[in-house]
Length: 114
Length: 114
Image (cartoon, rainbow over all chains, first blue to last red; front, top):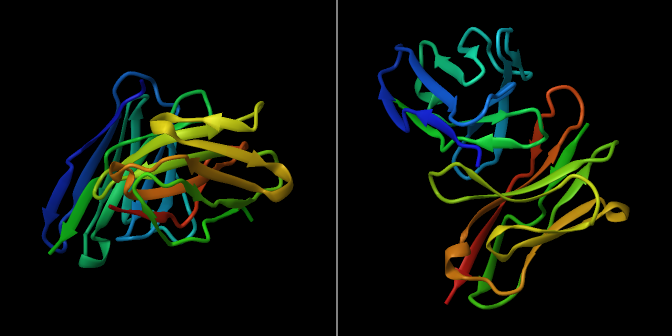
């Protein structure tokens, strides 16, 4: 089946630093990748959609300059949280879609900003 | 605007009893519908999906769901719940335009009592 990985699974960083999260589709080419944010005991909120080789499309209210998304290849997308602050602490989940209608989800990355 | 409603925040079911989780959606076109399960600190696992055809769909782990267009519902059912089914369940609508984004419901936490 389609497998999506995320790295790292957990990361702790200091306030003011930047952290990069990778999302990879391991056995298929992802035409579109999605980044979600999930607060404790809440649902997934879509942050942005990225297509290989083009700029990401951000949802309303998501700061483009703070959450940098790069979709460098058909199997890799990265999310960089710049100048992280404690309120950015959250669970970040990516998903990838091939040419079909289904999204395949990664296992998530727990970000803690101290 | 598209939306998904899961009216039950928590549900407690005795092990061996039947389960029904409710999901209602609002979407102008024919939706793609999904049910996902999430264990604590984990990513999302697809239980089942509806794209077209037979309105009763079978999924993994003994789950099934029925699409009722007249009621804009896609309720999830299982005839006999196991303790390992305790988790968070999310219903989602897949938009069949553009990037085919997913809109998630707020989730239902299933607790299984002995």
